[in-house]
Image (cartoon, rainbow, N blue to C red; front, side):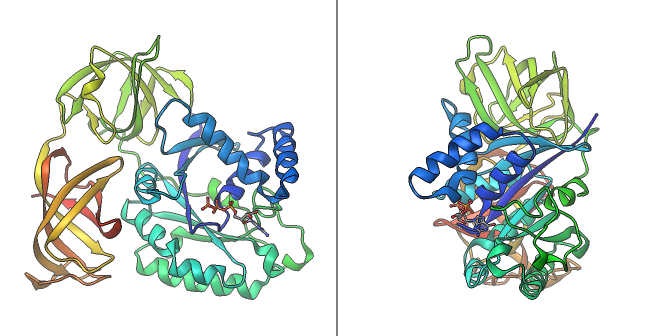
Length: 414
Ligand SMILES: Nc1nc2c(ncn2[C@@H]2O[C@H](COP(=O)(O)OP(=O)(O)OP(=O)(O)O)[C@@H](O)[C@H]2O)c(=O)[nH]1
């Protein structure tokens, strides 16, 4: 079986995410030349020919989301070694919750940075850092930094080195390991260093990997295939004629096969798996790391909601109302109302207690009962939810307040 990898694309607005992914899909022959030419023409007609590649992504997004509520859209392409799924969280409004859902399903992240004069700098003040912090907090360990639009700075080696140095300093302090960070200078618009080596003579200094090579040699996250089933439901589809009730989401642990009985939590209702699809192909089974669609029988769809967990009825996930979490604070954190996010799951809660601040690396207690946790500090806190939810130790959550991400946390055993 071919290696499978999922990655999420992140980066500041306008740094070129859509263009880069459109380019990737065209050059990997997922989108045919004729469709691209058509888009080029349409874009040219309104004087924006450079938008054609970004439209490739927008168009597939629209097609894919018609009639269903796909907030995290997927695209696929493959190399000889790997089948890739691009997780793409479109839209600016509520982008962060979508990104959390995308990141919770990803093996690695591609961070797109605009190298052109002043853009990198304004991105640093904008979403570049927040996105990187968020994916790391969702458990993503590997990050490929696409230093994009290198054509606008004449493929300057100095600019590339300067951006790489600043970013690697930041990324290592957010606990990405240096060996898990790769920088690639490229240009999505011209396609240089995306799937083909750069040919511009000004880029002679670069002899490293292309983006696709870097993705292809990226190690994927460990799969907990042997553990009891945990599938975080991302979408629920209902009303199909052959398949009236279906769910899709990433298998975090375990596996499923046709005929299995699953338990949906928190509704505590069981369902039988009638059929399974992975990337629109029927299959007999799916394992941790994959994002299957399960067609179900013997359940009323009112018992299924995005954010719920489908699990093994013999080893069900528990419902909890209060949990202890180790958090990394992005903003000042005090006892306050918070919104708790885990993938698609969103719930209201209260940050009840600040137990202690902890040493970032050793985890040792620095101060008991602090009154406040400052940005950048690590702390142990107790959160009380408004309702019981399926959560367990090792689950990663993001805490937000008034539209701002204030902390990311890892659930500890209570
Ligand atoms: N010169 C140059 N321009 C680029 C490159 N990549 C993207 N652009 C341009 O940058 C602009 C933004 O690109 P998009 O792909 O829409 O950026 P995005 O990050 O997807 O933007 P949002 O989805 O709005 O966040 C467009 O005008 C692109 O044509 C590149 O490699 N070189």
